Image (tube, rainbow, N blue to C red):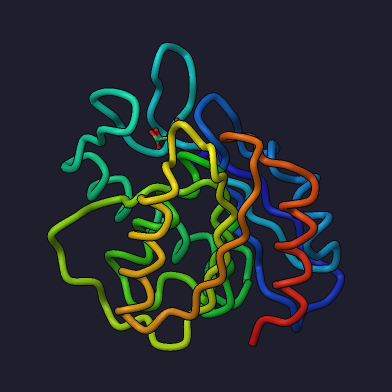
Length: 201
Ligand code: MLT
C-alpha cells in the first residue's frame, strides 16, 4: 500500500497508524499525529480504493452504506500490510495505535471488529459501525477514543453509541468525546485525544 514511515525519536513509543478520510492521503493526518505524540513513529497509509479520484480504504455503495465484501477484503489487506511494514521498518507490530478520521476511522474500527490483536489501541474521529451481525474478537483492555459530533450528519450520535457499546461488549475500554461541529475534525477534539493518549494504559 502507498505509505510513509517516519521513525520516532523514542523507541518505547507506539507506532501511530494514520488513516485518512475520503479524498485524503497518507500525509493528511501528520499534523494530528504531531499533536498526539511527536516522538512516536508514524506509518501513514493511503487507501487502495478510488472513488471519483478520491482515495478511500474500502468501497461503498452510497454514503454510509458499505460494500461489505470489499470492507472485509480491504481490512485483511491492511492487516497484512501492517505485518509487512513492521518487518520492513522494524517497529513493534504489537504496539500500533490507529489514528483514523471518517473513512479511515471506519477501516480502523473494522480492524478491531475482525482481528483480536490488530491494534494496541485506537483513536477514531467520527467513526461509524463498520459491520453488523458478527461476533467481535476479544478486545479485553483495548483502549479506544472516539471523537464524535452531536450533530454529525454522517456518523449519527445513535451510531456512535452503538459502536461504543459493541466495542465495550468485546472488552474494549472506550471513551467518547462529543463536539458539535458536524463531521469536522476539530483542534479541540485532537487535543482531547492527545490528553487521552497520555493517560492511556
Ligand atoms: C465511509 O464511507 O467510510 C463513511 O461514509 C465516511 C466517509 O464519508 O468517508
